[in-house]
Image (tube, rainbow, N blue to C red; front, side, top):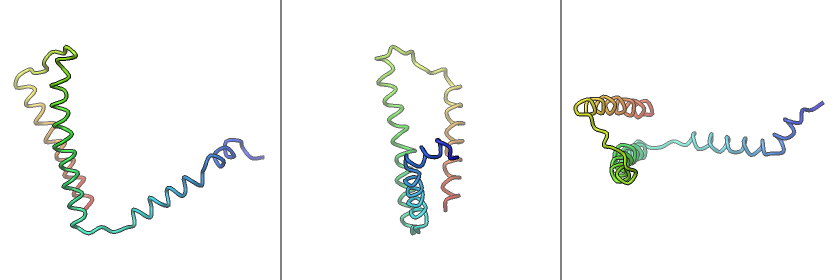
Length: 101
C-alpha cells in the first residue's frame, strides 16, 4: 500500500526539485578565477558594508520624526556598543571571505 503523502509529493513535482538541485550542483562545480571572485567580494562589500547600512541610517532618520519616535541616543554607551558590534560584524565578514578563498 502506497502512502498518499508520497503520491502527492510525486505529483507536485519531486522531479522538479531534483532538477533544481542538479542545476545548483552544476553551477557550484563551475570554477571562477581569482579576479572574478575579487570583483564579487568588492561588489558585495560595497552593497552590504556601505549601501545597506547607509540606507538604514538615513532612512531611519527620515522616518523616525514622521512616526513621532524619540531620539535613540544615550551618550557614550551608544558609541561603545556600536563599535563593539561593528568590529564583531567585520570580523565575521572577513572570516567568511577568507574561508571562501
